[in-house]
Length: 303
Ligand code: NAP
Image (cartoon, rainbow, N blue to C red; front, side, top):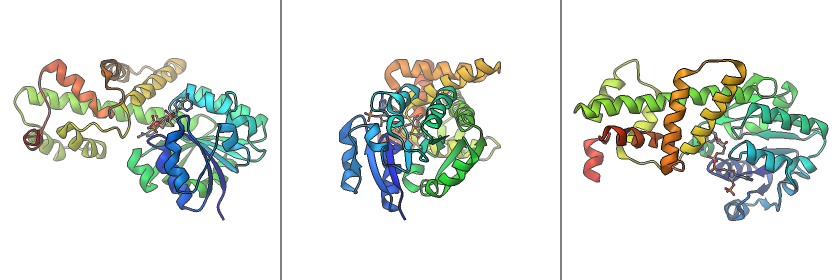
């Protein structure tokens, strides 16, 4: 039998996630700050809620995926926020990548209402959300994790319990630190090779035959070589996650020298107005500094 779900945030990730839940037979009340984005979900059978509180009031589960900590505080704790109306016994699953500290505070508010709260950030990007192949990193009570798992199986292929409240987010920030740095350093290497006259396709063949080969750059390279930066994961959100990772590093006394430098590269690209492009657009910032482009002959011929 389907669950009643209040779903908050219909952006790049939220749209396909909400759609999958409807298709799996759940009853959805959806809220998005910009109401137009709820139209496709309404057409698929969802009720459009006027506020987060309206989406949450009769839900067994509330699922949210909004941009950042401020957005999450607004939809959860703000005027007509979801925590105003959440039912006793309900589970609030937040898949936004936000500050673990803010998330723990939201968990306390939920507990005050007799509801459970899980931080459940994801990896897998837009295509993972569309195919139900996300990986979830989850923090909170084990009992709430076990109760939420059957529902989350509609959205993901892997659900990893990380520990107490905030642990899922701590894991997510570590993962995106690694991911952002891998893409940035891949781009630096390719810019260096291109400046010396080594073509990207030649360099790629070398990487594919070496230990530096990685699933992430297998996926991103064709987009970089074409200069196609349609956002799967916007650069501004990668910068946000590196900033959150640095805050966590400072709070815990963990030195992260390479990540600190990489964060500034994303900051510079964002300051140039590239925040809404995919984070692989970080290559264009490096290209502009070196005055060279990393495009394959095939992509250059296509123009
Ligand atoms: P997005 O397309 O920019 O969507 C952001 C959502 O947050 C929209 O629904 C937006 O509403 C809402 N929002 C922003 N500020 C708000 C506010 N003050 N009050 C209410 N709603 C607000 O972003 P996304 O790519 O779906 O990412 C969402 C979250 O998932 C982020 O934390 C991101 O880091 C994380 N994430 C993304 C990916 C990915 O590949 N895209 C992968 C893993 C994790 P409007 O429509 O009104 O702007």
